[in-house]
Image (cartoon, rainbow, N blue to C red; front, side, top):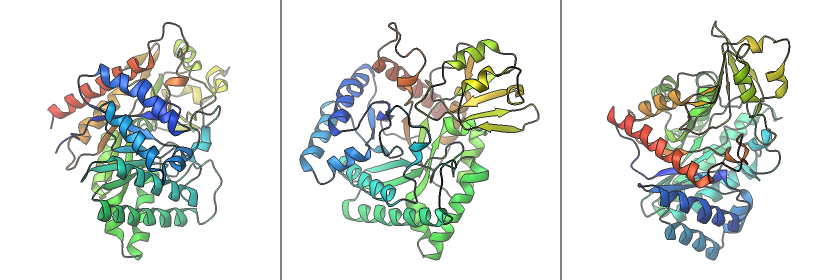
Length: 397
């Protein structure tokens, strides 16, 4: 039972990266400065868009340049975020972030190329991980055979990752990342049944054990907390069903307590309504019932007279906020859930790879304020907070 001994990673999807040059600029401007501020080693969890992957694939000079920049700034890379395929910093991302989904040949080809790139960045004998979309978003259209095609592509990827291991000695695993209102979201209701069907399809092809070895979950604590899950129990359900958690996203969500009477909290939450990312909102009522909204809107927050959604005991919103924040003015956060999840992760018989993923800094309220601390300072503060939480979890092993 142990936590990962690899350097703590932070995901670079917070920085624009539409070209190799932009990826390198993010590393030299931000990642290197964050590493300079820390008194412990740090890893860069690269997000490589499809356009960057096209630049890097088959281009030895570009790959060497990227590897050299990492080395020059004492950064390693053992995990890639292969969830966003296109421009994650366009004016409107929203439900498009789930496209192409796992029924698309674009998704499987892109993921294989990312695995090959990561294999070149890993040391000899190293292990790595890729996080990816939870098959797709339920709000997007799909064909009747959607799941069967997704599973065929995932089985193909597992075989590719096994081939990569056999030929390079680097073992890379995929983590499907459950997210609210997607094909894999709530653990018991959606995610576990999807894994069961994937493994059943693999069993029929005689490769279930191979698929279980290479295809598992990326457990994003913010996502599961937004759905009001007992995160420790959710992790235990993965364990009981033999589903490997290959990666953990150390993340924190927004919570509004007593919405109908908490005018100060609603006023703060208004500032989190923004046009780029999807902010699925869950409301839990006193009787335990849960209702959902696809996105956080001003209409829901300002509704007068208050509708039933406003009468909930609390709202939780899929908006990644700093993990060091227990409160945000009159808003609460799910930081206690994060601590509970890491305590549970520390009891596993293997060590999932760990990454801080707060990609919302560019759209955070007050981001453009003149007195706002530099982004590198805030990321460094997050990593120190994550290290403290991991230290506390380790003490309980």
